[in-house]
Amino acid sequence: MVNCVVVDDDSDIVDLFCELLESSNVQVLAKGYDGKQAVELYEKFKPEILFVDISMPLYDGIYAIEHIHKSHPNAKIIILTGDSGDNSSYLHDSLKIDFVLHKPFNMRTIKEAITVTLLQSSITEHNSVKD
Image (cartoon, rainbow, N blue to C red; front, side):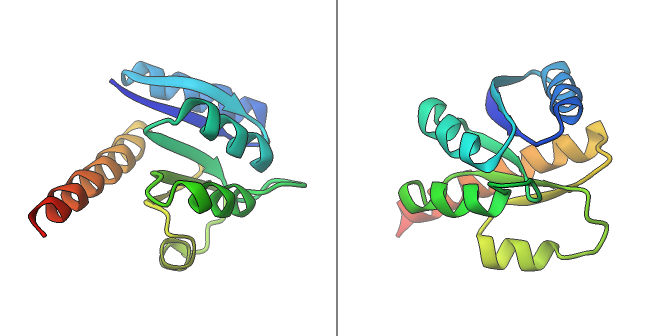
């Protein structure tokens, strides 16, 4: 079973998203509501995947990603965003994240995000063993 931490400043979105994850056999280890909590929860639980909203007041997702990558450069991070603009490639390249999920969510895209993120991880690990 895959495990994760979910962080978004909207508690309703966190609850709904966690329900969707758990219905797909993804274990939610913890919930957070800002980027500072995202860093603390990542350090505490070391989840396989961190789902984090990019836009939050005070401590945003960028804060969380930058701080987590300092000590965990291979952390698997999926950004949650309500931004309808297609800045996915910018986010991938500049923040070194694994996937961008646009709100509103559906089960197909959530499963795709998890599969792609974990598949990329196993391919990278497999290739580094060969080198």
